[in-house]
Length: 125
Image 1 (cartoon, rainbow, N blue to C red):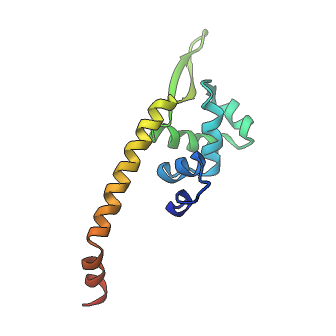
Image 2 (cartoon, helix red, strand yellow):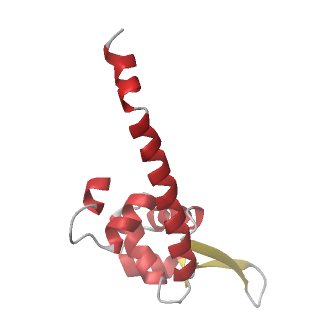
Image 3 (spheres, rainbow, N blue to C red):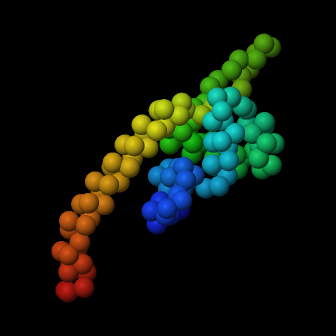
């Protein structure tokens, strides 16, 4: 997704999440599976989105790594363990997204400030 999508009049939170967290449609679908406050295991999520476990696992890693989700370890009665995944609280995600937007704005402003000198370096040697 690009910044151009965010400047459209009808841009939605989908475009925002995809742009600032670099999510693809599957990542977004898995996020929405968890955003209602429920937790789910890998097999359950893979079945819900009709994708193989390894593909869903990669999306979950991206969500957890980006702060959009979390992973919990659950113990089995007879020994062993398994993982369940959930979405981070929406208020927390909103604060993270606000900070990412601020950081992006600062970075873009810096690039604009240096625009003329950077172009001259590349074209006028």
